[in-house]
Image 1 (cartoon, rainbow, N blue to C red):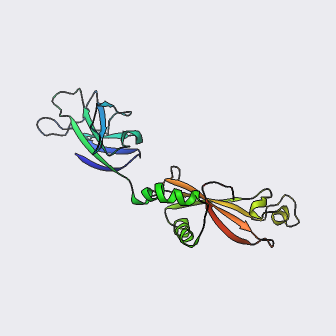
Image 2: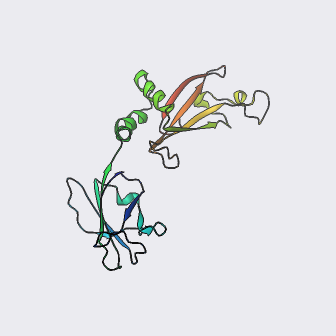
Image 3: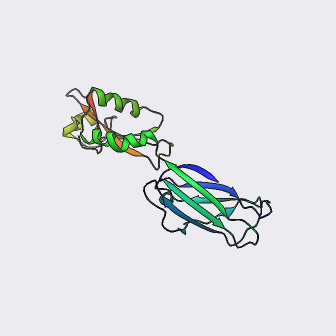
Length: 212
């Protein structure tokens, strides 16, 4: 059995346990799952116990195994599942992992651009495209204190009503997740807002942190 899974992401495998006569077997006992990782440039060395163990789905003869992210963090993973139940064949699963192209970009050029703290025309278009993409989740953070570097003053926040925030945005947290799992984003960056003397946002900048 072969499977394609995203690298470094916890996943689940579903498979049957089959007898030597070709029948699906329910109620297998003493399940034992082992794995070994390797790549095109590195040999497999030795099998190790999987963190999780295979469980049957009801009484169907179909089983599932949770494979942790650190068990699929290289090019390939081979898994062998055995049982102490007599006359049941071992189940062998070969996993090939992949990294989305967008994530590869994020891991190289993207980080370099963000760390430069520059928002030129080209970078601005990249930020705008990703910033409003369906793969991102935005969280707006409002200023509660003056932030001089961003042109945020107490007067701009209060507008004559001390302690009342009038919606001055300090920055946006932008979480990018190809699988839309915002709790485990592929990467995170910030869009910092800057205000002119009249309290108008006159510039935005992408950054790896919240410092202008």
